[in-house]
Length: 329
Length: 164
Image (cartoon, rainbow over all chains, first blue to last red; front, side, top):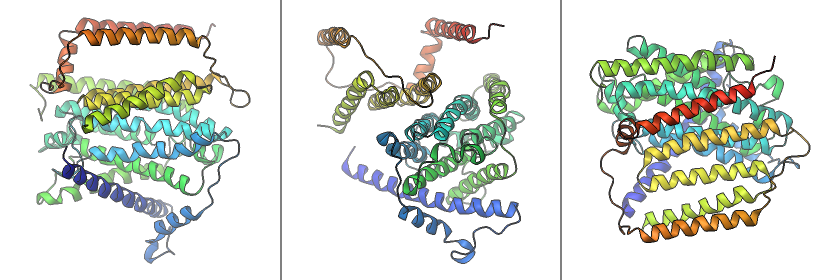
């Protein structure tokens, strides 16, 4: 690789990273406003016009707060955990194509890279839970491990359905295969697959109704209870980055990615609107349902979601085999 | 020195240090974290060899899956508070001798094989090639592994069931 190429890649990565952080910061405001509307409140309103400067005020406040490290914590593990948690959550954006040719790297193993890297997130999570040396944090980390073992497989299988239909692991190729028919509109297979994807996505992100590891009322805030100041901000940032990244993946896999009416440069806007729709759907669920019990969560995964996604994947493979090859291959 | 060579030596250092730390640290939990680091570094070696698919699988199955299960085991066996299980690592000397012997063996095998100085380029799509090899040439070992895994699963179920 020549130096010029390396510099260009570095600049592109820098721009993307900052864009992700900016978007994530404002997504928190969007979620708060959205939740407020659902509950007949107004939401953040005082800082700036319509509360538009609220995320910046929050970020400044978190940066200036005291950084408390518990005396009995496992200091290295405790301090490294937010970073180990954050890195996979922003790394997933490296392979997302935002429009034809616009993105850091449209890898030929794009979907696999996304799934593999986001599987690393759990390491940071239990580092935080363990390193805090706090009973609540440890309980939360145990629940997290439990839940993530259970929901990783359905999530992967659901994400593999479009891969089989499109005949490629490259995200750009999957989008091109949806020209004419988005995979969500694929008879039966698409709708059920998308539904399974959404449920597994909510569980993988530990959001209500699957938030047993956060559970404010019983575990205070779970694995992040001992974190304050900038480390807390990093954990929050990572969680929202993961939600946004998975929303983009859902839009690319099932909702036709950047395809839409109008000229090609509108692709970025189409994709972002679709990802936003997925995000709002997840948020809508979050603010409408109550937390369900641990055994129910595990039951849903092992008894319903896993067999369902596995058989959907088999049906998809059979459809592709008998209709003479995948659409994108 | 090319970027690839530099990357390899960096990864090799991380891999070696991580693997040694896995067996030498007293704290079991730290040992798992070093294991995760070593497994990710192994993935990096695959990446340097242009085997991106293997890199993804390595991360997904080992760094994501195996490490999670090991942590699960530690958390279930250790008491939540109070004294913690320590890694004892007895018979370090014997282990060192065996690993030195294995190292010398590998070194001799590599020394005898005449390897090209340039890495031969990969032919075609690695992912497709792997898939085809698994379902044609290596289909028997692939199926045997599946049977083995089912047997292990059934065995685990047998030991985990209630007696009543």
